[in-house]
Length: 67
Ligand SMILES: [Zn+2]
Image 1 (cartoon, rainbow, N blue to C red):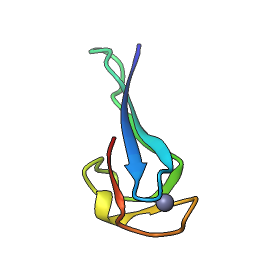
Image 2 (cartoon, helix red, strand yellow):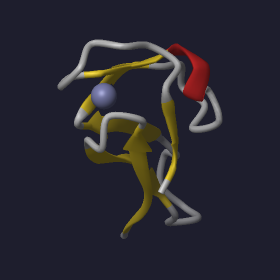
Image 3 (cartoon, rainbow, N blue to C red):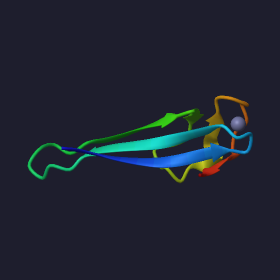
Image 4 (tube, rainbow, N blue to C red):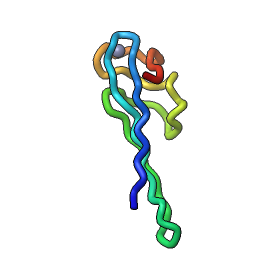
């Protein structure tokens, strides 16, 4: 099973997107996790790393917050 956590994000310009974190929650298989952004780029592996995310619409960095 893959557990997917979506965190909605919004930029100051009104562009919305989300942070999607996927992880394997099966206990006896190799664990893994991955993340990606929709509507924004950059950021670290941490979903709290809002300051380094860049809006794909207005191009500004660090203007993103949780929607
Ligand atoms: Zn923006």
